[in-house]
Length: 229
Image (cartoon, rainbow, N blue to C red; front, side):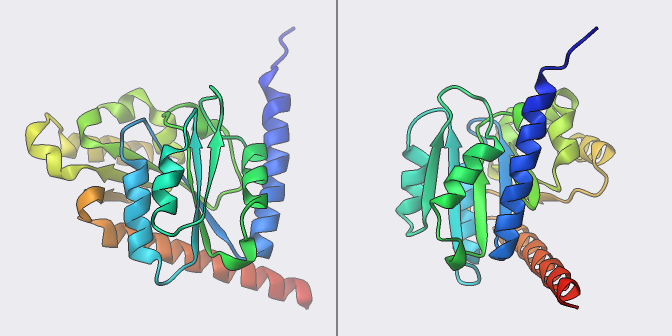
């Protein structure tokens, strides 16, 4: 007989994630779970996204990291509320961590929360946090072969951001092969080419995110209207 010890942990995570989703929906807050390996440019992408959308939406950030408050401090320096989660060694965020983080945020004053997950292309794929969408970032220096090595994260992501495209000329990155393999794994996922630190391509990515936010708001409003009838 085999006993899957991971099942109770995942079941508890799912239950708490559903509670997170209910709480966030009640306040009309959209949540983006942003995943990537270390150094892919998660924080710079978040800052570029904030710059593109801060006039339209009230934004906060939950920063996940094994240690340090470096990234949260960078976000706060731009006047954006940020909560730091240090996992102390865990390679991903779980829904109970997000539950405590959102309790520290003024949800009634927010439209969008961006979660920066711990740098890792494996573990974050298994944990629903109560988010509306999971999106992953790959940077050009990491190589075009990552969809072959880490297919799971490409399969569950609603969109893929290819960052640091300005470095394409100095790396042996086969973009055509990369795009082809991503769409083999996930035919519906759009791929956004950006250079976050320079703002290149960010407008297209931000517009896609804004469309997702508006669609989620409409879905919640429709659900409320149906419940009131």
